Image (cartoon, rainbow, N blue to C red; front, side):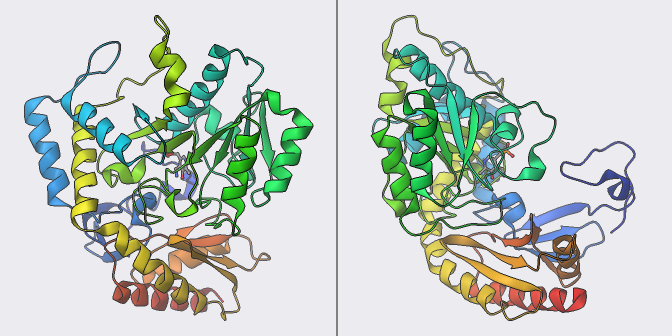
Length: 413
Ligand code: PMP
């Protein structure tokens, strides 16, 4: 469907071409979306990795509508609270992978990254280690596009509009010994936090090598560095658990989340901080973290979050993710014989990728467009195609996905 725009500036878009040709989405239901021409597509990306409960869930919409009729909006600054924010914080803390978790609510993933970075640095400033300012991140990482997130970008193309935030250092994505080496070179007493996506998402769906996450968490613990699990993609069932780290058995110090917390229905994110990280702020009279967003704890967003959390549990959706991760990888491996494909990745959570040949610039976009002509939306990433369907998908949907991808690959080859 081709509709021009004179004013809407799309994110991550070549506007010179997009201004002449857009895909206007008008309706969504479960794993399906429709464009303005009425064409139906399988949403094999769950929009931007977030529609984990499937689109159009009545329970979430009803919770939003009911909340709008009660308290449409009010802020959380200073001592103001609202019931949905209190209940959501309790619900998330009860499911957190760390003890006595405190929940700072934001408007999305990028806000949460900024919040976690500032909490980490401020924590050390308050506890007599003001030299701990350096933030470590991994190659291929994606932590959003705010100032801090851009500085923490491991995807080279996303490092736009320098100069970056000082005291940010990149390390290998897959090697805990290198992490320890980086720490020693910089001086562990200067490192505040290590940002780590359990499975790297936008950087190409890179599951960690076996043992890496566990070893990296141990390195951090050994040197007093806070481990920040960026669960913006991996949380809320994508890896089969609440915050994307249960399967690795680690205890992070901070967790950033967004997306799936409302299945994307309302813009909401947040940070979980362990009781120990939060203690200097919570237990010292007069101490204020001068940080927050206008929409932190927005009651309508939090009502959506509460309804979504209930839905995940009621429908057992995380178990479905566990059951589907193998079948998705199997479908992708079935495509690995294609001459345009160099590798199939996945098997750690219900997300996967096909790496394409390196010598054909722009090929991922061309294949994604061709696959779309066969009724399936997939995601072109750096040099790979990404797949992350709603957790409500079935094996039949995965078959349809594989068939469309093969046709798209053939078309471009
Ligand atoms: N962290 C990760 C791992 C992400 O994937 C994203 C978004 N894709 C973000 C942070 C940023 O979230 P947002 O786009 O909501 O700012």
